[in-house]
Length: 210
Image 1 (cartoon, one colour):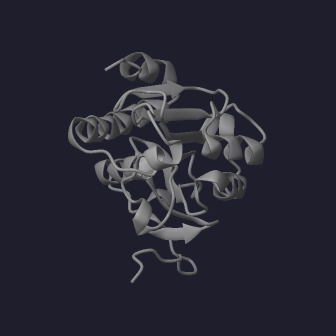
Image 2 (cartoon, helix red, strand yellow):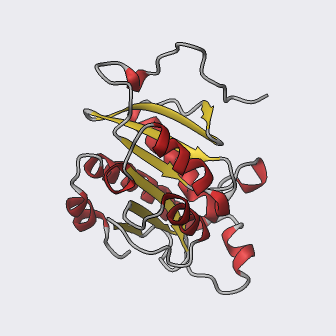
């Protein structure tokens, strides 16, 4: 049985109460749908969204534009949390239409959370913009949105020492798992700064080597 559902006609979500129902910032965590991919290195974006949702009391249970999403507030900023259900390499097919529907400029209102095999497990790398860096999910978002100018949080999952596919679709254990769990909490704190436009402060505070 699915825990996700479509919105009912006329239904108002918690983050839509007030003068305007539109979110100001979309926070998208990348991953692959399905139980076989749960908690793998490639799905740290999904897991980070779960932590952010719990921390700020946002239910991510609705479906639209090939994504599961929910709206709420982080501080006084209306946000939309989402997990694309398109599979990683087609993430832009969910994120671009969501941004278009709510008339959000990626440069001002998009934060993407993804894995990074070039960072030590649990290390965060926050950037205001940049290239895909070899990440196919980010590449598709750039292609579909037509810009590299959106903020992103990369979560280190440890460098690959063998088969790349096996590495990113594998699960962490021991010390690496603990470090990444701590990174989710840090990412949840960092987005509170980023949604207020304080990305430089977030970078200075969380872009530390571990």
